[in-house]
Amino acid sequence: MAAPQELTFHEFEEATDLLAETPGAPTISSLGEVQGHVSLDVDTEDQEDGELGEENDQTRLLGDEKQSPNFWTFSYHQSFFDVDTHQVLERIKSSLLPVPSQNFVRHCLGHHPDLYGPFWICATLAFTLAMSSNLATMFQNWREASFHYSPQFHKVTVAGITVYCYAWLVPMALWGFLRWRKGVREHVGCYTFLETVCVYGYSLFIYIPTVVLWLIPISGLQWFLGVLATSLSGAVLLLTFWPLVRSDTKIVSAVLLTVMVALHALLAFGCKLYFFQSLPSRPISVTQSPLHQTTPRLLQPPRGTEVSRTANV
Image (cartoon, rainbow, N blue to C red; front, top):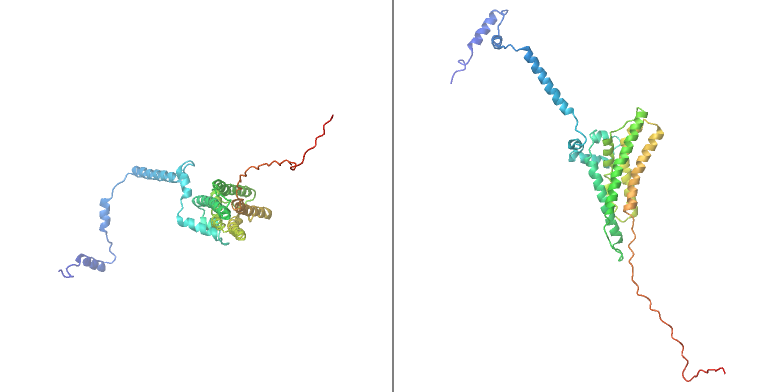
């Protein structure tokens, strides 16, 4: 193995001795000479053409990214369903337990609304409402001998139309009203239409377990659960839309919030009265045998008596 002294670079030691003797002498870097021999002359016109080509490519790419898809394409609607399970569960949790210090749109949605959660919440609520209504009708009258159960499939249609119309038409009317008030008063805020629909869709989730618990045949408990669900769901709406309308006049703010809560309560108690009312059992027609008419017997004279007849002369 070579000794450590043999591996040292002696030219570095000589250069160090020379610099120590003449500290002010100028030094010439060999890299500069090498770089001078390797340097190439680049045509300025070709360089400018290359830069312009790169700029055009970047501009074309940015334009393709900024170009939004058309309404009738699948990619346009796909963006509204781009949400994972964790986000949907967190938004459902926030709708069940409203916090006064948190705004549902800002803290939960993050100004990125989705239609996946509201669509399936409304569908689940409609089927749960119709199924629970049929089961409640069967449980209430199954002890009666004269009751014959037949599934009422029309309730699925009625529940679906009611829930989806409420989840779309009411937010549309509210969004239009807030847009109009924003034009009248500058300080009034307004969410987007999809954000408004998303808030109403997630606020209906609490009605799903409530409808299932309405199968318990206790009237007082059913009304208590309905009031509790309406209070929690209505609190989500009030806490979400209050920051938008608080700068408006007191009359407009009070009327708007009252109408919102009243429509929300009307949906709950309307479904309670229509789908969970005690239906009367079907009457059974009893066939009766016709009455036999009896003719009275004629009175006959007793034996041994003669009827005297008088003859006219």
